[in-house]
Image (cartoon, rainbow, N blue to C red):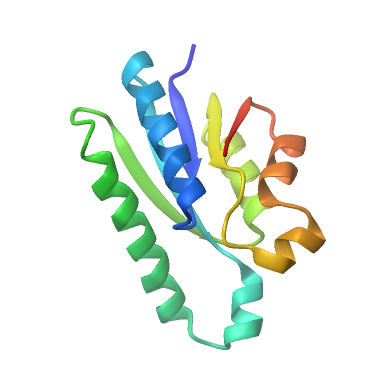
Length: 136
């Protein structure tokens, strides 16, 4: 049974496609949805001590995802921002929140770094203890 769905989002087109999938599943199964935005710790090293700007950007991403979610009224949707390694934080949140499913995009905003280090979706699929749907 699917009762809780975790949807990591970074504002990319793929993450919004994953959100659409998750919302449809949540509607079908009566599941709760948590939107998760992870601020990578590497952003602090690259951008510098602009924690407020990074927090504001994450809130904007979640706000846009919540706006998209309004197309499915009646669903229970929450949101959360974490700081750290995106894949590790997604897996940790899935365990701590007892999620039944993770639905995420296949490509985020990682660019060359994601190509060289392996995608977040690949790492999450490898490490998660619950099923992971990767949406293209």
